[in-house]
Length: 210
Image (tube, rainbow, N blue to C red):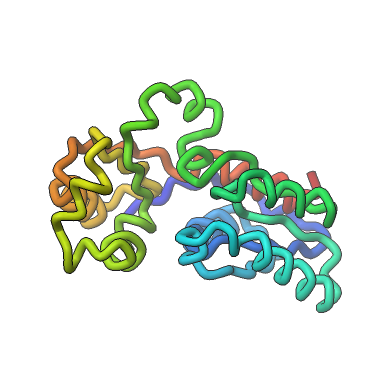
């Protein structure tokens, strides 16, 4: 398994707390390790919050308060907007903390600029990441009852044309899982090995005090 992460000399600095979506915890850990960001501490919120975006902002707000209560001076939010409709940006502005740019993790893994350039094809695309390839049943199939009511596939995914797997790692097992998900949904399949995209420079910049 090969992770596409930029390696760098250790970037020292004032301790930084990263408050992150649990769905990208593995990827953040890889970036932190590869770039020797020894002064970064990671706090993860439950990935399942993505199924209820209205709960993301209160959870991030509580995590910021808890971090400051522990004496943390520097905080970075490793969430994109993630369906909060700008509410997360409003919170970050009030709290004077930065977040990773982008509408969602698919965009920053692909690269926000490249993702925006392909916008015309997005409406008919169902996106997968390494995390969703691993956790499709827990985060999609069971919550939407596809395991008990497979007839719901057509209702939920009938307007999609393809599954695009934005792979963070070159993993044959995850590729097979992603292919199986596409087949289950009756959609065409495409895999793009994109690595960590804009996540790496965002974390490295935040760790360096940028």
